[in-house]
Length: 321
Image (cartoon, rainbow, N blue to C red):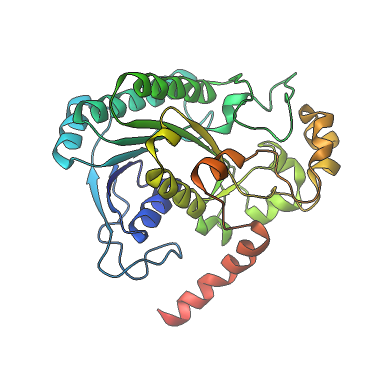
């Protein structure tokens, strides 16, 4: 497929572009500042994702997606088979609340409108688990594990923007041709963060595992960015009837914790309630059964293996470069 990925220079966008190119897609990355992904594809890929020689690749286009006319013109000129919309302010409270709400919802509407006018066949938009409102005073989970039927209760502008975006996607699913869907990626971890780079919260993944209070803020959820790419690839390959208007939680198959959530929730995440006693072993708080059932997708990576492997990777690369 010919796939546009917005926000291609971001933490998630870089890995999604690389993964799709490695799977044979022609990727057009859109961002205000290109990340130097041009030409990636074929053998090797990036971020540890191999490719197929002579198939796939990434092209980058610099664009301000808030320019509706420029965005519509570019989408019309590129004639993509699909659009994956990741662009937006990605961290809660990283900008004034009104700016986050207006920017994220406006970007989504501009991109979706451009897709509809161009007759794009598939459009997938990133949302967030924060839409359910965890972490706020008095919040209680309706069930555990948490699945896509859980009520939304946004408690900040970032989460509210994602709720509005999800409803915008459903509006286009009802009114436009093609398939429109959303996914809620859990706490995204890029390859460089596994190797020790600070996360968006300023601490490392090793520190996040050592102190349960750090991971409890997001209910111990996480997702390797490369597994996000494989989810997108599975979504693109699915039957339209399985994805049109649908939303999916997308996360790792285990929790970001060294002890079972059943042993941790009372001290670190009391909002989960007694239903979390069922989260024994390595079971995560967020269920990914819907993605497995409808798309056949399962994450391949766990912190238990990838963290140790990533920590030695830079040394290996320096010896062979």
